Each structure stands twice: as structure tokens, then as C-alpha cells.
Image 1 (cartoon, helix red, strand yellow):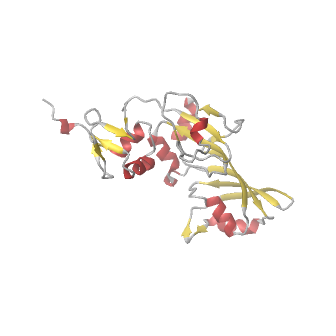
Image 2 (spheres, rainbow, N blue to C red; image 1 turned 90 degrees about the horizontal axis):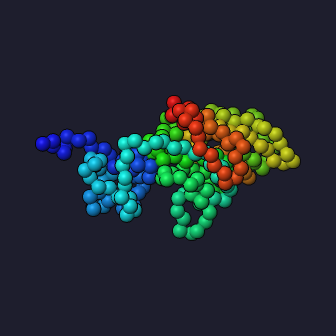
Image 3 (tube, helix red, strand yellow; image 1 turned 45 degrees about the vertical axis):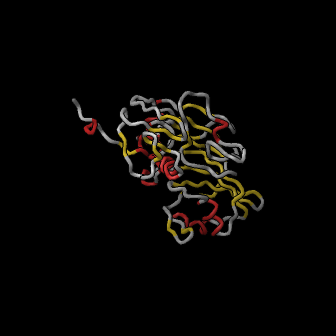
Length: 245
């Protein structure tokens, strides 16, 4: 008789990610909130493991179905302005899940965009892929068109290219160039591979240029293309391979 302990034990965060419920980081937040249960008991330890096929896992009261053959799905979505990057909102605001495609897969957004920002965001049912794309160690460049108030001079951007300092923390170098000016406004093209909370707004405000508009047009090799606000499209297998490699 096979001993059940010989089966592979997997961290609960990874199981949640593989099931397409959330990224590993988001899974950790679910655990901390008390929303995850293992064999009928609330999970309290972040590193707790389970045996798929033997143990029973639930998230927010819903049983987690674990499939070893889940097909990775990825969609490109044009997130509208004034829309929050979350699946649920108790305040009833417009949320990104309002624009999800009709599919049986449980999709979640890869990363975030500010409420008042717009543009490209990827959706997937693959938590490991989401983690790969979000983590700065994987050096996934993300491109933005940014409008600021003021006439920006190229020499003032040198500090950002070396790596901006925001709230006493040095960030990774930024690719940035001036596109054009209109009256007292400047349009910039910015590429980040880190993208911490409100980074673009903070680093430009530190230089004296308040941000008026942010539009993300590229994530890795995937661009916004002809998508209009609120529209989405499925990535083909070749595009998915490009973002995985």
C-alpha cells in the first residue's frame, strides 16, 4: 500500500496559482485575510503545504479544482480610464472584471494599472506565468505614453535614466524620451521594468512635472495594437511563447 506522504507536497500559494485563481502574491493576501481553508480549517501559516488529490482546498468558500492539464490562456485587454484593477469592489466602482471575455477559465489581471490610467493589461489563468511577468528580476519592459504639465528638457531626465530615487529608495533605470510638446504640456515615452506603486507619477512629480495622463501601450513583446477602450483579444500560441521565453 502506498504511503500518502510519498506524494509530492506543494505550497498552498502555488496550488492556488496553478488553479488560475490568483497569482502567488495575491494568494498570500488571501491566506492572510483568512479566506483559504485546507481540509475544513483556516490556513494560518504562509508556507503550509498540501497534497493535491488527497487534501481539500477552498478559497472564499469555493472548492479549488486542481487540473494538471490546464491550458494556459492569456488575453490582452485595454483597461479603460477610471476603472480599478480588481475582481470585486464593495464600493460598486467600474472594475476590470467588467470587461473580461466570456470564458470558462478563471482569469485575473497580471499586475495593476492606476485607477485613472488606461491601456494594456494582460489577463491569464496561469498564476506562475503572472508571477514571471510581474517580478522585476525577469526584466519585462512595459511601455507607457505619459502627458505631463510643463515643458520638459532632456537634461532633466538624466537622473531617471540612471535609476530614479523615490522615497529614499533607488529604483531600476528607466528608458525615457520626449515625444513632443503641445502648448505647456509634454508627451513622454517611458519604459519601466519595475513599476512600483504610482512610480511614474512620483518620479516625474519629483522633477516638477505633474502627470496628467498615463496610457500603457506595451508589455514585453505584446502591444496594444488596434484595441479600443474596454476591448480584449486572446493571444495566440506564438505570442504566449514569446512572453514565456
